[in-house]
Image (cartoon, rainbow, N blue to C red; front, side, top):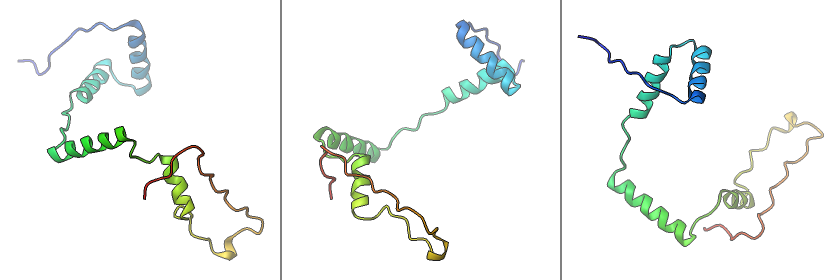
Length: 115
């Protein structure tokens, strides 16, 4: 009995050329590359738990209501509260002509972050 099944596949020329480039670059056979691609494709997909699904539904509802903060808004609020500042360096190690880091301006036309 054979330990492997053999398949013949057809590929569009562009895909075949890309496969050949990768094969040469990685010094692997086409079979190895296709087996690896199939392993990734066939990996089991993790299914979310009931609690995770409820959290996803809740988050989507919040987004539909506009109840969220953008990353820029979060950064602006953290800057305003001085929570993104790095600790001061030891004075002896700070160069004499060091310029202060410019603060990011609050994005205009956007609503304030939630608290």
